[in-house]
Image 1 (spheres, rainbow, N blue to C red):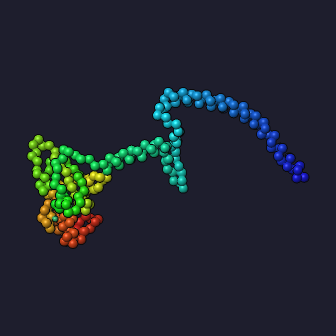
Image 2 (cartoon, helix red, strand yellow; image 1 turned 135 degrees about the horizontal axis):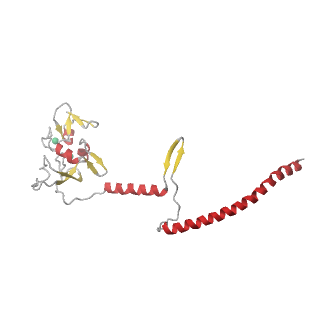
Image 3 (cartoon, rainbow, N blue to C red; image 1 turned 45 degrees about the vertical axis):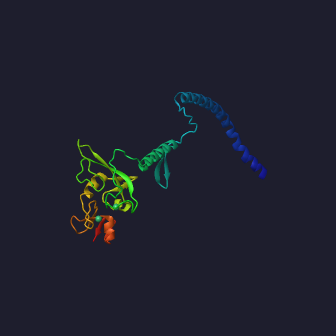
Length: 232
Ligand SMILES: [Zn+2]
Ligand SMILES: [Zn+2]
């Protein structure tokens, strides 16, 4: 019984696909010929227009990837490479320090609190171009004779904390943003403690009263890092 059963079950389905196989083989040959033909065309096109730099590996096809019900775009390998190289280039450019020889050289003094860089390290140089400038920082450099209303570029140095506590000035890569506008304002404000200009921190509840960061610290003013203000 067992043997007969095995024969019947195994022989029955084998016969049917045997015919199909023959038919498939014919098709396969046709497919193969077509494939070879297409391949030779593709090779010809590739030789004529393909990359000469020897990109032998095939790039991945961009596609949508669905994971956990969320669809994301999966870009090709070459695309990802181009994007990451571009980002690297921009980051390097952002963090690169470049000396600007056309700028007016300033004293190695904090452009905000007037303290010399010999006491504590200063960051810089940063450069600002003013056209025009209302409040020239005479403590940093002699005011140039503005003849043909040419813009003036000046080199600036800062304490890390002085720059961080200056409102509306932000660190972007190696650059401090909005410096031109803000420095003209800070140089117009005198410190309520040391009386020197360059005060950036507003004293709360006291109109038009500003202080330098180190001066506020020396007097134990309470500094609020959210408002960049202080309480005397
Ligand atoms: Zn300072
Ligand atoms: Zn001060």
